[in-house]
Amino acid sequence: MREAGASRLAAGYFLTQAALVPLWWGMLFVAPASRAWFLPAPELDPAFRALLLPDLAVLALGSAITAGLALVSHPMARSAAWLVVGAVAYATAYAVAWTIHVGAPMLSTVLMLAAAGASIISARRLSG
Image (cartoon, rainbow, N blue to C red; front, side, top):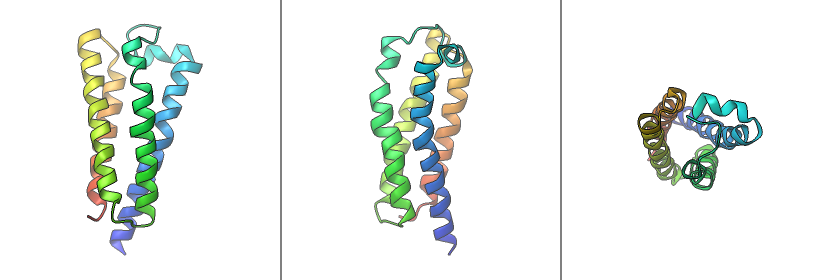
């Protein structure tokens, strides 16, 4: 029973992440004033915008798939979760570099570090 509870919690986290990634990108496009919280300039730099599709395809969709697999205790749930962890790790590294090299506000880095940590914890809770 404990394992099922851990899988449900992990599924809940990955489902939340799957929803928040497109919401965050949508906010950047629909509410330009929000960019000041995350970006060094009010424009969406082309190098930054290039992350949109991979973020949606691998991080958001991967999180949704992982949540579904975890909910049904599918044997591939843990593998899917670690794929998502890789996507989060890459995005986190990019956020850190963006903050260091172009002076982006720290909020992006802080949120991505939290997402990476929560993704790792959630992946570890899934049975392998």
